[in-house]
Amino acid sequence: MKIAIGCDHTGTALKEALKTYLDSRMIPYEDFGTFTEESSDYPRTAEKVCKAILSGGFDRGILICGTGVGMSIAANKFNGIRAVVCSEPYSAILARRHNNANVLCLGARVVAGGLATLICEGWLNAAFEGGRHQRRIDIITRIEQRNSPPGFSQADEVNANEEPSSASDSTDEPKPNQDTQPLSPSGGA
Ligand code: RB5
Image 1 (cartoon, rainbow, N blue to C red):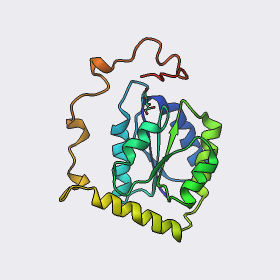
Image 2: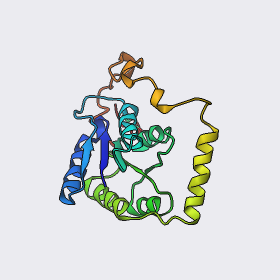
Image 3: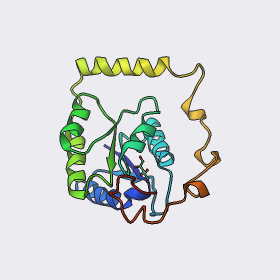
């Protein structure tokens, strides 16, 4: 099993902790960034990781942002990606057994390294049960197909680098203290 892993600026430390765990289990992975704590846009990393999975080079992905929510929303825009955000192991295990989730999203501002590792471990070890759960995933796949525009190919999407706006836009500048109070209800940059 080969893992594609990525994060935004909130998740660099947790990503390193999970890479240490993957190393300890000798599970191969590739890190798709980001690599600094400079404010970055989570959908760009989600896109890189999801395209890497859909290209066939990776079996599963791990995405980390502040809450895991933004990453899961972005990842689930890709047909064939089943991303879940989990804050405890039970949901992560069932997300494999019942939902065949191929991307695990974690919130670096929600779960610390020890719990995140347990969530990750449960998700990595659990196996898809198939049967009635496969039937339900087949329904999801047909929903994806019915709702894709005719002729649309995700491979044709514009390169993320060509898109307007970025984390450096003046309207999106981090406000003072946002990142020094990561557990405040408003989050941070
Ligand atoms: C960044 O402040 C934060 O919005 C992002 O990491 C993520 O939590 C979005 O869902």
